[in-house]
Image (cartoon, rainbow, N blue to C red; front, side, top):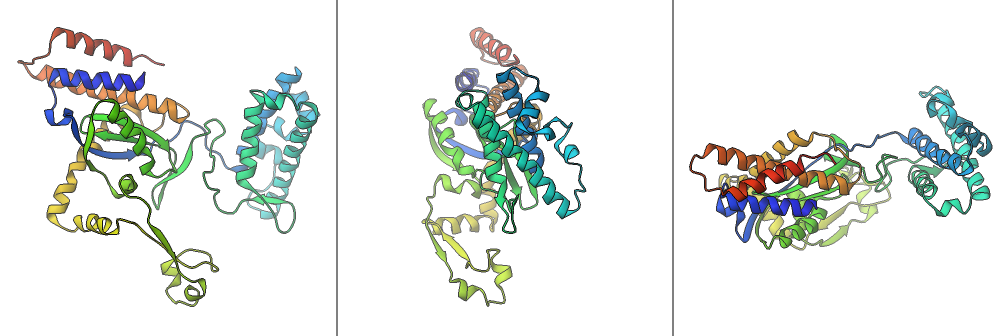
Length: 374
């Protein structure tokens, strides 16, 4: 429905003739960009994530055995989960590494007891919702954040696991970076414009190029083709395929006095360099920003940044929903409103507009529909 809504809105834009005809022709010149909204799910550190997930498991268990949560915790051997917060229940000095390690072992021991209780007393319930989903979430968090400790016991993983889950309530939120110093937790919204022709939503940690198939599919459904793309280099994989990777011998890298400036890889690994199949094209794109004419040509992307500014003002810097699908719906809905609002401004400003009464009726109907709260 949200895809069709955007398609219908573009048809209204075509009927009103309120836009430059070049933006609605069969072959489109599109600018594509992304923006990083924060997710709606709560982001927590490892200890709180595990406690949050375990509480949801215990609530499911209590409902299945038809007993209060307090009794379920007692039977499962998880008294920590009765505290107002996991860290309050552990009650340690969180600046002391030794106490943190002991607290983690206590928490993990109780989570082990919870799993043993469920597998022993409720094996069939593990195959059904909602216990199956909440239990899988807890196992996922343990697998991604906890490692064996060489000195005995277990410890919080050093470094960040690939595709690390950051929220119990929203399974698709991820850590992302807009720059080396700016991290965010949530998603990436993608727009393809002159007019807003297509939208996509991806987890924050995924490369921009992964939005391309969804954008291309939306454009194809509208009976349009992409004639030219104006993108930044984050989207370069839309049109380039990976090349080959060259790895230097670790023994050659190790004694090099410039190693620390050259690579951050571990001492037993040499530097790697990726060489794209279209390396010459990448070099050409890099050279564009070094000339006045090249920079002028690249300014065709500015329009999509303006669209994002308006869309962010409408949607806010935090997603309304949890999960990619609902947030894609919300982005397409907001994009439709953005187009219709532009139509309204242009039609109102023009005393000699050519908009028929049928088109006005359709515009008003669409505005009413997409203003509803879902």
